[in-house]
Image 1 (cartoon, one colour):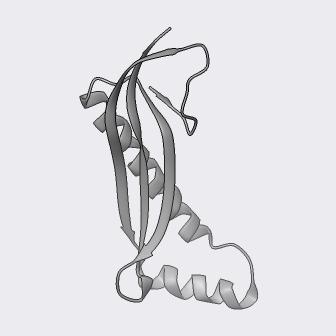
Image 2 (cartoon, one colour):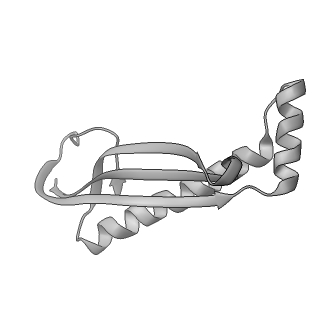
Length: 107
């Protein structure tokens, strides 16, 4: 499955636009991660635990996007957009939302 942020695929002819597909993942941030992240905010540096959660959420969202596209008969997703949000009470959850257009191409 080709997944691209572009709206075309080089050397490929898009034969069908199948519709919008979305993958989402919402991950809860636990108390310990919040405490260590707030310490990092004060002293500076990167928060590895939050980065790991974002990476995990992004991988889940991409897998959902690809699965939805396959179910539609697509072999590519174009025009992909990735959004990150903090949601929930006091920003306690991290959300990754990925959307794009499922297409079928031929070489």
